[in-house]
Image (tube, rainbow, N blue to C red; front, side, top):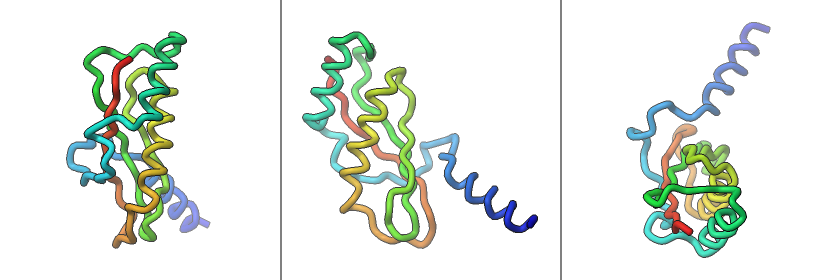
Length: 120
Protein backbone atom coordinates (compact mmCIF):
# COMPACT_ATOMS: atom_id res chain seq x y z
CA UNK A 1 0.00 0.00 0.00
CA UNK A 2 2.85 2.38 0.80
CA UNK A 3 4.48 1.52 -2.52
CA UNK A 4 1.27 2.36 -4.38
CA UNK A 5 1.05 5.70 -2.57
CA UNK A 6 4.66 6.52 -3.45
CA UNK A 7 4.06 5.61 -7.09
CA UNK A 8 1.00 7.87 -7.21
CA UNK A 9 2.96 10.67 -5.55
CA UNK A 10 5.76 10.32 -8.11
CA UNK A 11 3.24 10.35 -10.94
CA UNK A 12 1.50 13.44 -9.57
CA UNK A 13 4.81 15.26 -9.14
CA UNK A 14 5.82 14.52 -12.73
CA UNK A 15 2.62 16.21 -13.96
CA UNK A 16 3.66 19.50 -12.38
CA UNK A 17 5.83 21.66 -14.62
CA UNK A 18 9.21 22.73 -13.30
CA UNK A 19 9.32 26.10 -11.57
CA UNK A 20 12.16 27.32 -13.79
CA UNK A 21 11.44 27.02 -17.50
CA UNK A 22 14.69 28.42 -18.94
CA UNK A 23 16.60 25.09 -18.83
CA UNK A 24 13.79 23.19 -20.56
CA UNK A 25 14.52 21.98 -24.09
CA UNK A 26 12.66 23.85 -26.84
CA UNK A 27 9.80 22.18 -28.66
CA UNK A 28 9.90 23.73 -32.12
CA UNK A 29 6.38 23.86 -33.53
CA UNK A 30 6.72 26.80 -35.91
CA UNK A 31 4.31 28.98 -33.92
CA UNK A 32 6.79 31.55 -32.58
CA UNK A 33 7.42 33.55 -35.76
CA UNK A 34 3.86 34.54 -36.66
CA UNK A 35 0.62 34.27 -34.76
CA UNK A 36 -1.72 31.58 -36.11
CA UNK A 37 -4.77 33.18 -37.75
CA UNK A 38 -7.22 31.50 -35.35
CA UNK A 39 -5.32 32.86 -32.35
CA UNK A 40 -5.12 36.36 -33.81
CA UNK A 41 -8.88 36.39 -34.40
CA UNK A 42 -9.56 35.00 -30.93
CA UNK A 43 -7.33 37.58 -29.20
CA UNK A 44 -9.05 40.39 -31.10
CA UNK A 45 -12.52 39.11 -30.12
CA UNK A 46 -11.50 38.77 -26.47
CA UNK A 47 -10.06 42.29 -26.45
CA UNK A 48 -13.10 43.77 -28.23
CA UNK A 49 -15.43 42.20 -25.67
CA UNK A 50 -13.14 43.48 -22.87
CA UNK A 51 -12.74 39.98 -21.43
CA UNK A 52 -9.01 40.25 -21.94
CA UNK A 53 -6.57 43.13 -21.87
CA UNK A 54 -3.11 42.24 -23.11
CA UNK A 55 -0.28 44.71 -22.57
CA UNK A 56 0.91 46.18 -25.88
CA UNK A 57 4.35 44.61 -25.39
CA UNK A 58 2.90 41.09 -24.90
CA UNK A 59 4.07 39.57 -28.21
CA UNK A 60 4.55 35.92 -27.20
CA UNK A 61 3.16 33.29 -24.87
CA UNK A 62 5.36 30.52 -23.48
CA UNK A 63 3.85 27.13 -22.70
CA UNK A 64 5.37 24.15 -20.91
CA UNK A 65 4.55 20.87 -22.68
CA UNK A 66 4.89 17.43 -21.10
CA UNK A 67 5.65 14.77 -23.71
CA UNK A 68 5.43 11.11 -22.66
CA UNK A 69 7.83 8.32 -23.56
CA UNK A 70 5.42 7.28 -26.31
CA UNK A 71 5.62 10.75 -27.86
CA UNK A 72 2.14 11.86 -26.80
CA UNK A 73 1.43 15.27 -25.30
CA UNK A 74 0.22 14.65 -21.75
CA UNK A 75 -0.12 18.17 -20.36
CA UNK A 76 0.24 21.78 -21.49
CA UNK A 77 0.68 24.61 -19.00
CA UNK A 78 0.59 28.17 -20.36
CA UNK A 79 2.58 30.86 -18.57
CA UNK A 80 0.02 33.17 -17.00
CA UNK A 81 -0.42 36.45 -18.89
CA UNK A 82 -3.59 37.56 -17.12
CA UNK A 83 -5.92 36.31 -19.84
CA UNK A 84 -6.97 32.70 -19.15
CA UNK A 85 -9.10 32.40 -22.27
CA UNK A 86 -6.16 33.28 -24.55
CA UNK A 87 -3.84 31.03 -22.53
CA UNK A 88 -6.19 28.05 -22.97
CA UNK A 89 -6.87 28.78 -26.64
CA UNK A 90 -3.11 28.87 -27.26
CA UNK A 91 -2.74 25.56 -25.41
CA UNK A 92 -5.24 24.03 -27.85
CA UNK A 93 -3.28 25.34 -30.81
CA UNK A 94 -0.07 23.88 -29.36
CA UNK A 95 -1.77 20.52 -28.81
CA UNK A 96 -2.92 20.43 -32.42
CA UNK A 97 0.50 21.51 -33.74
CA UNK A 98 2.36 18.96 -31.59
CA UNK A 99 0.34 15.93 -32.72
CA UNK A 100 2.57 15.11 -35.68
CA UNK A 101 5.80 16.62 -34.37
CA UNK A 102 6.49 14.73 -31.16
CA UNK A 103 8.29 11.40 -31.22
CA UNK A 104 8.91 8.66 -28.66
CA UNK A 105 11.64 9.60 -26.17
CA UNK A 106 13.58 7.88 -23.37
CA UNK A 107 11.52 9.39 -20.52
CA UNK A 108 8.61 11.74 -19.97
CA UNK A 109 10.06 15.19 -20.61
CA UNK A 110 8.92 18.78 -20.12
CA UNK A 111 9.60 21.14 -23.03
CA UNK A 112 8.89 24.81 -23.56
CA UNK A 113 7.38 26.24 -26.71
CA UNK A 114 6.40 29.74 -27.74
CA UNK A 115 3.34 31.03 -29.56
CA UNK A 116 3.35 34.45 -31.20
CA UNK A 117 0.56 36.83 -30.22
CA UNK A 118 -0.72 39.68 -32.33
CA UNK A 119 -1.94 42.45 -30.06
CA UNK A 120 -5.45 43.67 -30.87
